[in-house]
Image 1: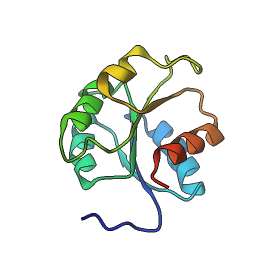
Image 2: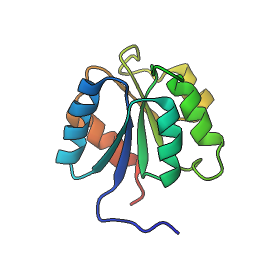
Image 3: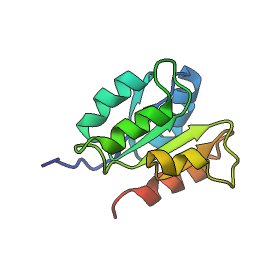
Image 4: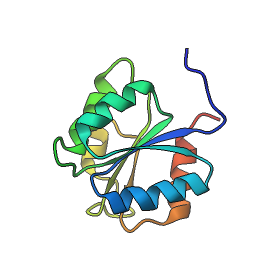
Length: 127
């Protein structure tokens, strides 16, 4: 059984350090605990610690974010962890078709609106 801390823990996966920095600050300022990964391989290991949600860039240097999401959703241990896909190529008002195919619960598009990110994460978390 997983012990809950007072802060929801978000796994942030992006190979670009500047994106991780900005998103981490947004999430931390909203009261979340953030763990960061720069590769899909690392994310597939860390997600087994059962974060409360994952924000996952689709363009990673080793494995595509879609494959990472598919791996999360097909693993019996991690399949219930909510995933938000993230990319600059997503239209802000139109979900990417790949989202449903890999089982992601939502998506974020660049440029980020901090309040939208926080709202989407909070919506995914259990009440």
